[in-house]
Length: 248
Image (cartoon, rainbow, N blue to C red; front, top):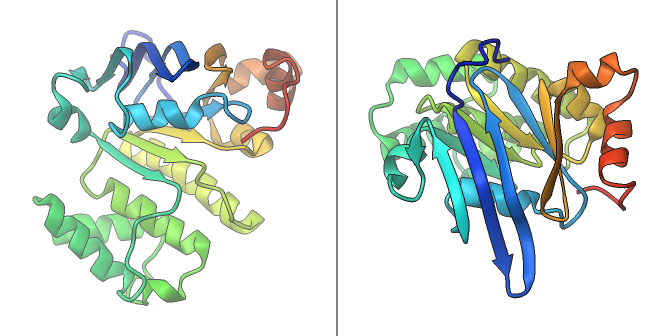
């Protein structure tokens, strides 16, 4: 977690807006994410989470506002900004008929400048030494997620974005992913930005959380602040979203 309040954020979102027709999906959203922390992004169904993530990843253009990654404006310096980003939206993009190692080597060849030593280092980091030569088609969903994270950090990104990474995982897989993401933040000094519908899991996984509802940022807090107030993250979520509906 970031202990230096004067440090420049890895990700800066400023006054972000996005509409689809008459529907204002994201309204003046602003927040920062720092190196070495796990930052949780929470909100009810249709709150604007995935739209915000797609704008940060460059899949959608905002109507207005700024996205800075390592100080690079995503709109005016897209290539340099995105060079610092790794991400998984929905399922990891891997080839089932090849081994995990072959998948990583193909990804490394596309990216360029990734050494065999870096591949070996990442395999160890995500704990895939025993399974990396097996075909991906034989992997459980949890192992595929580990491979997806490995692929996403091969090029040493400063920002790792994961949209609903726990979907479909059993409790053991969720725990393994949580430990892995905390390890990424600590050992690689990556800013980890993650959305999930599992509030109790996010409470264990994250250093800070940001809650969005109806496209508006309702609150941002550290998990420690929530605990010091003798509340759970679920309490804070329900209060800030006015107990609004189900969560994504």
